[in-house]
Every structure is written in C-alpha cells, then in structure tokens.
View 1: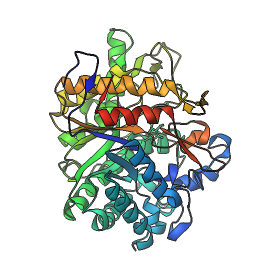
View 2: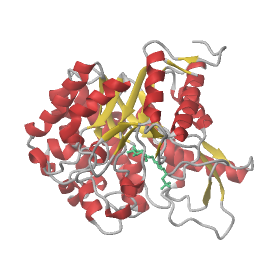
View 3: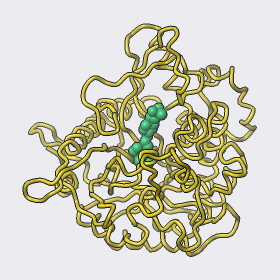
View 4: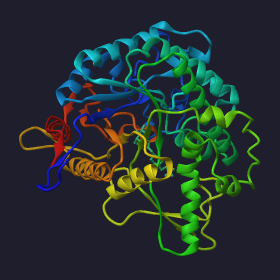
Length: 460
Ligand code: GBH
C-alpha cells in the first residue's frame, strides 16, 4: 500500500463489489409461485410512493439476470451483493419450501461463479411476506422464528456456494421507518412498535446465524447495518447528549446486542417512558450475539445533531424519545437524495467500529449516491458527480485500511438504477443506467471509472 504518488492502491485480495436488492430490481412479482410482500401491498396504496411507482416490473432483472451478470463481468466486479426474496422461497409466509423460487437464486449463483464473481447474499432486504405482516409482522415474535426456518431453507440450497451472508439488511430501516414513521412498508406508525420490531429483527438475525451455522455454510456470516458517525453541532453538553442519544438509537442499539450480547443501558433508559422492554426474553441476547465472521456497514452520510431549542420538538422523528433532537445538513453540496456528502463520516465510522467493537473483518456493503445523468457529446452517459462521490469515499476507505482497519471489500449501491423505495424510480443510484421504457442497460461513465479502478486495484 502506498500513497506517495497520489495513487491509492488497495490490498491484493480486496473485493470490489456492487449491490442490489430483490424488490428493487427483480420485477416478475407473480412468477414461479411468489406471493406478495409488504412492499407490493405498500406500493399499491395511493400516496405511498412517488409517482405511484411499484416494483412490479422494475428493471426486469428476474428475466434478465444473465445479461446483468455479463455486465458485472464487463465491469470486472469481484463480488455481487443481491438479496433473496422471502416470499419466493416460502410463499404466503407458510412452512413449505418453494423449490421454483430457490431455482432462480441457484441459477444466479452458478452464473456468478461461472463468471468469476463472488456471490454475496442478503436474506432479508425488507420484503416480508404479507401474510406474516397480517399476523403482526415484526412486532410479532413469531416472525423471527419463521425467519430462522426460511434461512435454513436457503442455506440448504445455496450454502455451498455463497461467499458472504447477510442475515438482514439495515434492520434500523425495517423497524424505525416500517413501524415507526410509516414511511416504509408496512407503513405502521408508533415508537413502541419500532422498538418491539427492533428486538424481533435482532432475534431473527441470531436465529438466522444459527440456521446458517446449522447448515454448515461455507461462506462468512454477517449482518448489514446502516450506521454512521453521529456528531454534535457544538461541544455544548446539550448537543453532546443529543449525539449520544442518536448514536444509541442508530448504531449501538444494533452493534451492542450483536457484538456484546447486551443492549446499551443509556438507550434502554432513554426509552423507559415508552416501554419496559418486556419483549426481551431470557436467552434472547445469547441468541442475538451468536458469533459473526464479519461486520457489514452501509454508509451514506454522517448525522450532525443538536439539542432543539425549546418549542421546536420534532414529532415526526423516527428516533423514539428524541423529539428534542434537531438534525442538520453538513455544510456543502448534497446528492439528489438531499444527503450530505462527507467521506470523513465513513472513515470515522470504520475507525469507531474497530475501536469500540474490536479488530474484526469489515465490509462496506453499500455506499453510493443518487444523481441524474446526461448524454455526453460522444453519446455516453455522463455522471461526473457520482465519480467524485465514489472516488472520495474509496479514498476514505483507503485511509481506514492504512490506519489498520481490516476492511475486506466495498460495494457500490447500486449496480443498476432501480426502485428507490418511497422515491420510486425518481432517484437513480446505478453504475448502469436503466431505461424504464425498454429496460435497456447502459454502463455510465461512473461504471467505466469503477471498472478502471478495479482493473488497477487502485484509484488516483
Ligand atoms: C439503503 O438504505 C438501502 O439498503 C437500499 O435499499 C437503498 O436503495 C439505498 O440505501 C439508498 O437509499 O431519518 O427518516 O430521514 C438507506 C439508508 C437510512 C438513508 C435512513 C436515510 C435517514 C432516514 N437510509 N436515512 S430519516
């Protein structure tokens, strides 16, 4: 590794990846025995998604996966992170295994391996079978047990070939947006529901780890958390306390149970006015803290917070009991999502995970930016802002590696433009442009840039 010439070289076995999620790219929502997920239901409700968009067709990946794997090969990816749709494998949340649903992922994994791309599988990227939601969803402890059964079914089929497993993707979003603010499926609101869902998601993670281990999977076992550096706006004790509170409800509420077998005491105390946490049963924390082989982090922006001036309470906050915390953008430009661009937040997050949770393998399983693109003079798809974003964040990753973080790989969100949840198709995150009329794919300038970095194993 050397930084002297401005060229930043990465470790020789570094995984250069890109990521997607089932509901965001697959389409074919009725194919081969799939039943509805909470995102089919939510998308069908007027006013939930920009423009009334749904994932019914999306990029059509389910039918075009071979073409997409070819594009991955053209980019030179060393790993591809996708998610498996629970309602394809156990339709209607039931107990039978739908082999036709598993067949799709079986073919995808084989196609990846034949092309030299490592398969990285996420078991739950937000698409809960609707029938399980009808029985209470993540506020029902039973859902965690069902997840364990589902994980076992997938592990039995794919366990010999997947290189890295994520049990869950961003349980914070499932709990706090799905059951807290209602901005994500299933669209339920209430802070107690969000905290209950948090615990059941964590339990599902633990049962998922046990199922994967029980099946003797060959790959590493992990979980992908959305997390970030939480910074106080000023050094005042009030702002420091606001940062502590949000750090607890965003980061430590997941990291601590998984890696230390306990919930953060201050967060339990902070939320005491809402719940006594009776949903945590004896033995749960032991299950949740089953050893993982790596930690996966998804990073987009840091949080800058202060204590709100009296009278400015945020009643729409996803963070239970944090109505008196105000969020501020980092000064400077933002992406098309309105998110701050601050790669120091990624570096600081990686250093913090190592400092507080020990020296262990880490993957950045998502990082990227939404930007519109345009056709350049030579007919290419130009997206220079995304190139700048990726370069800056890869430099931050490099800095963390140089400081000793055991960072094994980096995955751009996303391989393809796709269904950006509540924003529908109005936000484009892809290295590859998707024309939603023809479903034609075109590698963007950022994809070419990334490909060049991969082939040199370095950035400038
Ligand atoms: C990830 O989530 C997802 O894993 C992926 O599917 C998605 O497409 C991608 O990122 C881009 O959005 O306090 O209510 O304002 C995004 C992680 C965490 C970002 C919560 C926005 C603030 C929510 N998100 N965060 S809120």
